[in-house]
Length: 320
Image 1 (cartoon, rainbow, N blue to C red):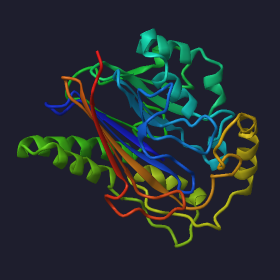
Image 2 (image 1 turned 45 degrees about the horizontal axis):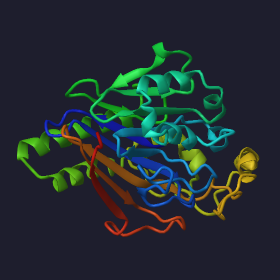
Image 3 (image 1 turned 135 degrees about the vertical axis):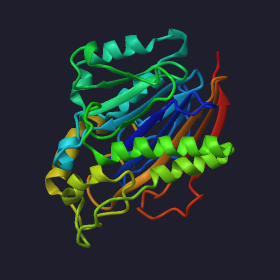
Image 4 (image 1 turned 45 degrees about the vertical axis):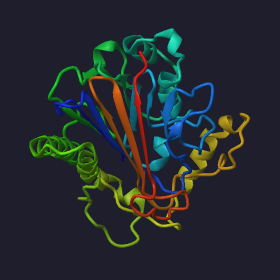
């Protein structure tokens, strides 16, 4: 039950994106970094559980940015598609800078793409820093169903594991309100960038999840996850869904045939401990300076990482 919040409400930053990645905690994920060649201009973490090594959020030296949330399904198995959703994000971020692909042309191609229909349901925010961003779903059938955000100042918009026009999820409404307040308080207090990061991390760490009896599994919690921006550790090692395992294994079989060096492939990561694994913040200024910060809260053994020890921060200027 991830959440992404996008704002243009800060006078000193043209774009702020904050994101919680909620996931089964044993799913292996890389630390954020510049990717290896031939995509060395891409910055972000990567999912190591599938051969695609896709990402859910990233930015490029040329100012392309993307963040993805999947659709909530009633069971974990239903959220798994034939291909990795991360492949969609990668296709935007890794297209050669020399091609000069526009956001509109990419979105138009994705709406028409049969491959996009073969992954689990998702919403993708994509575009360029200091330009309007598109929110596109693989359930969109034409360009009229695309929502554009960050098109003007003083906008704050949330997106979680439902359609972009669904305004019934408390975590989305709470996130928008709290992010707007954090920005306003930061401006009024004339604080520095580090304090802004801390305020935004507090928003991402807002825990209002109703507590169910100890030992309650993720499948039972699913309907409650829409109520909390932050998801504390829930579930246990013995919490397994055999049907989800079988379906997930079948869906990744085609990717297992691809050459890889990642020993995690072929294993199932749709059961066990679950929670907010990573918190990511992107701050972009009108002059093209970008700050990209990510906090890792659990390693892939589901062990808590002490606050601060999993922090990575990057700064760069967008190449013209």
